[in-house]
Amino acid sequence: MDISVKELEHSYNRGTPFERNALKDINLSIPSGTFQSIIGHTGSGKSTLIQHLNGLLKPTAGSIQIGDFLIRAGEKEKRLKALRKHVGIVFQYPEHQLFEETIEKDIIFGPLNFGVPIDEAKQRAAKLIKQVGLDESYLERSPFDLSGGQMRRVAIAGVLAMKPSILILDEPTAGLDPRGRREIMGLFHRLHQEEGLTTILVTHSMEDAARYSDNIVIMEKGGIALQGNAEHIFADSDALKALSLDVPETVQFIHRLEERFNRTLPQSVFTLDAAVDAALTILQKEERS
Amino acid sequence: MQNIIIGQYVPGQSFIHKLDPRAKLLTAFLFVIIVFLANNWLTYALLGAFTLIAVFVSRLPLRYIYNGLKPILLVIILTFLLHVFLTKEGPLLFNLGFLEVYEGGVKQGVFISLRLLFLIMITSLLTLTTTPIDITVGIETLLGPMKKIGLPVHEFALMMSIALRFIPTLLEETEKIMKAQSARGAQFSTGPIKERLKSIVPLLVPLFVSAFKRAEDLAMAMEARGYRGGEGRTSIRLLKWSGKDTTLFIILLILSIGLLLLRS
Ligand SMILES: Nc1ncnc2c1ncn2[C@@H]1O[C@H](COP(=O)(O)OP(=O)(O)O)[C@@H](O)[C@H]1O
Ligand SMILES: [Mg+2]
Image 1: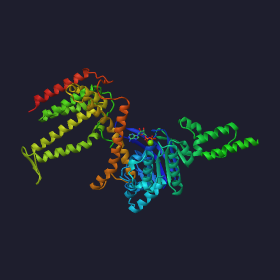
Image 2: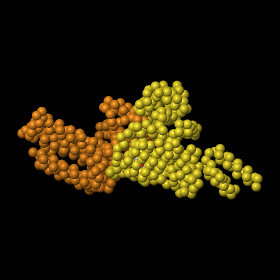
Image 3: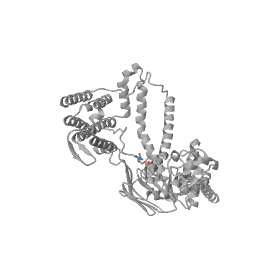
Image 4: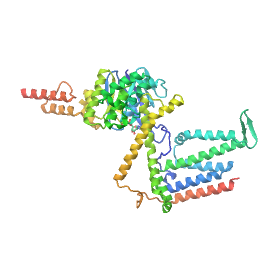
């Protein structure tokens, strides 16, 4: 399902002294099956934006088209539940949403709400618990006995169990250790490729954004400051600095190397492996000449 | 969820904002008493005028107050209807077959509803124009003499300030969890009653878990910073009684005398 956001605006607490304009003039299009990252400082409106994509928040102005669902300011979309079946959101600190007695029950909460038969829901739970890196024996345990990181994994499984075709991740690795972070991001990347998901990742990590995304949006004070593919975004490190954001370390490193030896590489480099290769290429060429 | 104004403080510079919290607390308390003096149209009009002027002077946006009162309006209307249909006094006004409406009932209904409305408005004004901290310091000072007879005034005030402080946090949390569960297909606002009750569980459990966690964290943080009760503790906020506060009391006195003279 393609997503197309047009002239979206949102103010919180309309008509009260606490009114706050959180989004203005957002235009964004996310083709089906792509990996979209959203970057921005705290308070720039990232979470507000993604909550519009399954009708949790209603636009103050503008419209959102998701497949054949249309959400417009001032109109009621009656098929919200159907829409939410397609759009899964892993919220910031999703472990706060756990509530059932057993992990299995919590994971199948979503699927059951959307009318999945209980047997199939349980099968999904058994498969997912392993995918998120926990043993199947955990299914019968209480989610409240787990460590924070494990709870996060269970909560993520609970969203994946709905089998959404659009998966939205709001800072899914915040507060995890580096290894947990790599594992979780690896899982999302694998699912993105294997299941052909449309993935929208809200993150502070330039590295993650660079490594996984087809497209990146940079938000600033409720608007979109920069937009484009990773090469395009990270080529312009001055624009990023102006927004007090960093270029990924690998990109920085290669830029410095290119400057130092006065060479340019044919393509951008985002992963560590690619950076090593690129550095080798430059150094070898340098040796030869 | 966004309309709830209990425990909210709206910053401002009005006459009412600048009053000493003790003056406002005492006024609210006295108002609760003198409201019961009113018993005819004239006295109710007097109370209404006082309330309206107070709202006007506070310079709070009227629409905001109205929206905040909406949920309570239902209770008021219900009260009104109960009185209208159940009080059988005075001449019969009209008869709907199974329902008989008497003049006394209508009068009772209007009076009781107005009384409720005035009380809610005045107490809301108190919290809307006073920071929770100021309310607490005010209560603690006012109740200070009670410490002598062994009442745990400080602890009471602390409990209250923590409760007030966490109302917005809890509301925020509620909204977050509601959103997270809605995204997983839970429905809170539609469906039959039985379904709705069941749907509250996924909301309440996480709320309780996080509230207990918050309480524990707070207790730990307070202990780590050496908190050990009110003994010998002084407040950084010094309350100052000014001419404004005395003026308020004079107005209140005039209002009370007016009520006493005009009531029947
Ligand atoms: N529920 C809410 N009520 C009122 N204001 C909010 C609410 N949620 C967010 N905001 C405000 O909207 C702005 C954008 O917030 P948010 O979308 O959460 O930013 P981000 O996710 O990029 O950190 C912030 O200024 C924030 O204070
Ligand atoms: Mg956020």
